Image (cartoon, rainbow, N blue to C red):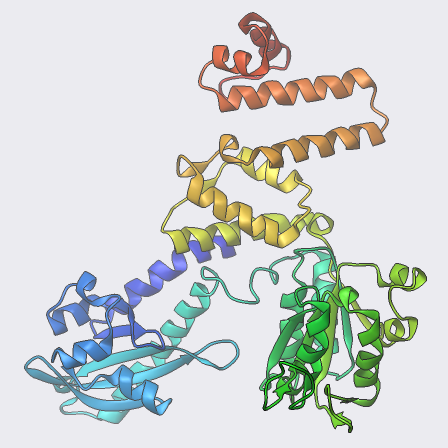
Length: 471
């Protein structure tokens, strides 16, 4: 039910805006027009293609309308209602800021009214009623649009599995406290997204969120990057000194990714920061107080690293107070279909396609091992949307490594399950015959690709009951 709403929702809301017979347009924070109603085009005397993508500031200079309501809203950072001259007429126009999930300005929406509409009855009541209905439709539109356009949170926060629900509950609990959080999980599961989510749900949401990948900074520079330095601390240093990321993250959250890569000599300094909320910049003689929450993440087994002497035990136990393990995608297979649909809609929107996944493709993608997890799924769907030969994405559009990995996994499962060798070999043969049948236009080409005769290939098709209907 929700998927059907997702497909028809934006079109439905755009039609509602057009049916209001009012001048409506939506701009981004640079004043660029993203949507314009049919009535706006008539009112202004321009075609949609002449308006979408244009700056309202430039249209104001050209005398299309005066003043630019979007410009006033952007300058004042507040909603306004003003009289606006359009061509030979005058209309009352309301401009409204639309905020994102972090209460940051995202869009400006303007709605115009004809002056005659209000003659003879209470203009104020009429305006308020229209504005109320208009805000509702615009907000519903933008909510749906966030499902189609990439945001920082959405790709991970899709799923219905029990483990996934438990993870979301844990995130909400740890967001309410100041204790350090240790996020673990495989590459691509969304550790950064979880850290951002914790920050945005916490009381520090109005402060900065600073992300440092410990593996991306050379060891010699990591200390100065993290804790900063005073002027003259070392040769080549900035003459005015430099604040570290701990200072920059003041009143907010510092997220240290790949914490397992933190050098041993810096680990005591991080431990001091965690325990005492103090640190010493390079070249300084006094400690500095820090008001910052620390979240760390790793795809390594820190406990094993402690045993190997590669990570300090006291730091590990200090980090391990609130551990959050993010399950891999193969551990929540029931969420794969929702993620496939979300990403398909998103990349169709971004790249202006109308792709759909065939049943066979969905089956393969649901059975795939996904070593790169959510990030890999996202990348593969974007590749398929762009590179598919037809609107229906078929088996032949899938990357070869994905098909091979899926079959290798199934062979491994067959062996683990104690299947006899001849059954495993038949399973592999059937899949190779099926793949060749799907990939090639004729049985002759398919047989040639497998290095067998056409007659042998035809016998195998009959043996495994692979038909044209399947193809």
